Amino acid sequence: MALFALLTSFAMAGGDGIACTFSGDDRADPVLTVTLEPVPSLKDRPGLYRVMMVVEGAKVRANAQPIAATVEPDVMIRAKAGAETYYTIGLREDGAAALHVAHSGAGRTLTGRCQRHEPWFPGWLHERGPR
Image (cartoon, rainbow, N blue to C red):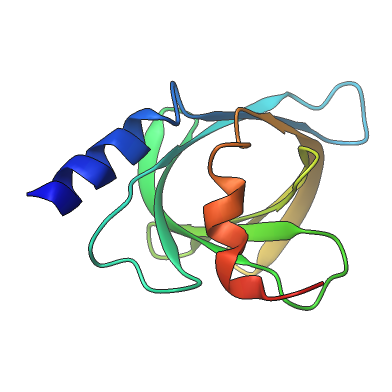
């Protein structure tokens, strides 16, 4: 019961979720809004954390994990929507982010920023080790 209370309070600490906005290089490109809702679970494993990703009104299950191959403290959040659509977000600790959308073998990368990720970052980076 104490573990449930701890997970519930941790989930509520995230507030309204992590809000991200992404755009392409061209001003005519639409702005894409993504919301990430961390969902702490007993099924989480060290280095792999559950997240719900809301893209264009559709909710998909995703996983957040530290990116070990970079110098900066950052994480990768991946989701699969349907049979052939993949969303991958690279998120730095300072809020800078990139979203890669792949569909049927073709892909596009958008750049942007995320807000309200700070409460979750220390836990997501925990398994990364010393820098």
